Amino acid sequence: MTGRTRKVVLFAAMAGLLTIVGVFQSWSLSLAIINLCIISAVMALGVNMQWGYAGLFNAGVMGFAALGGLAAIVVSMPPVYETWDAGGTGLLLTGLVVALTIIASVGAYRKLRETPPAAAIAVALIVVIGYFVARSFFLPATRAIELIEPAKTGYLGGLGLPVLLAWPIGGLFAAGAAWVVGRVSLGLRADYLAIATLGISEIIIAILKNEDWLTRGVKNVNGLPRPTPYEIDLQNAQWFIDLSASIGADTVEFSSIFVKLCYLVLFSTVLLIVLFLSERALNSPWGRMMRAIRDNETAAEAMGKDVKGRHLEVFILGSAVIGIAGAMLTTLDGQFTPTSYQPLRFTFLIWVMVIVGGSGNNFGAVLGGFIVWFAWIEAEPVGAWLIDTLTTWMEDTDPLRQHLLNGAPYMRPITMGLVLLLVLRFSPKGLIPEETGRRA
Image 1 (cartoon, one colour):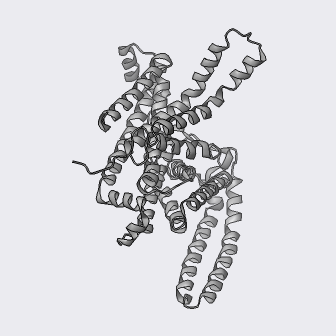
Image 2 (cartoon, rainbow, N blue to C red; image 1 turned 60 degrees about the horizontal axis):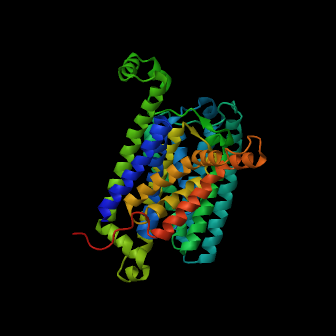
Image 3 (cartoon, rainbow, N blue to C red; image 1 turned 180 degrees about the vertical axis):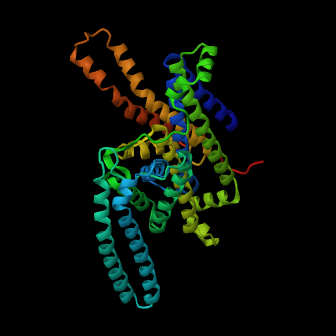
């Protein structure tokens, strides 16, 4: 089977599975799964850029996705003017002090770098003074902000702009964090890089959970604006009522499907753009250089390539794509929930998608995103149905039957492990392996 035929068959099989869900469960559920599969595929493309192109092991996917979600708040939520009046000035002064501290530290280091001990002492002294001055402004300001109707607000809000702008800005947030992380950790060995990115990811999540003035912390930010119509508005619109009647559909049910179709168009557009640019990059001289660096860093460096610089480039690009996907997911959910960012969902599953689909192949990453997320969603209901079917001969009150039915949610990690083992056993390079050799 040729590579092209393999892609067509696998994607057709995936489409068949989604169609089966639509026919036997509901089309609304099928569309919901497709939308989440697309977001997962975009995240997988970001990780594939880092690992498949350059061999960078980013174990902090969760943190970059969360920064994308943060962008949705900062961009789309309306500003809370009362909290700005209470503590906005203090936060602005805090930012000014931090900026001056950084400028002064860099200036002192450059002026005294010929004498390292003096430079270290001067920089440390500036940082300590800057910290306490910034703290004197920051703490009173955040306390005042969080006391303004904490059940409803207690945070600054956002800029009140269209939520679609949050998607590229989410990419910029993640790219900025990746630049900082990359400058510090990309010179480390692969295992140290994984530990560093995982630790930084946990720090990002901890900040989002605890800084109520920014994200409301564990109280969550609800009611994010949509880029699509609301179901209730559609149900009251005459044109939509007429459309539902013309196709013989229930207005309420069709409104849910219509909204999901709108999201499908938006998400598919982003996926196709990212996939197109990823393919162009992979097959360009830059992409061939990245794979050469991945395969043999020493040889590439001997040929005059800036290995660390190229690693930083691809690390930033991949993180930006993950940030875009994180903003898309928060937009779809309509809320930002810091506690939902768990390594299992936002790091481990994304890595499984890349491995199952085929590391180094963009179409493989997309396919992996669809297969793994579909299996993750369907494993629990299918597992519950299977257990119920196999134990129908038992009494409903039988403790063993109840125990097995209550264990249905554990079918998800079991299914992920089974899928990963089967793929690694029968297709070690993924379902759509990386294409090697020269193209005609």
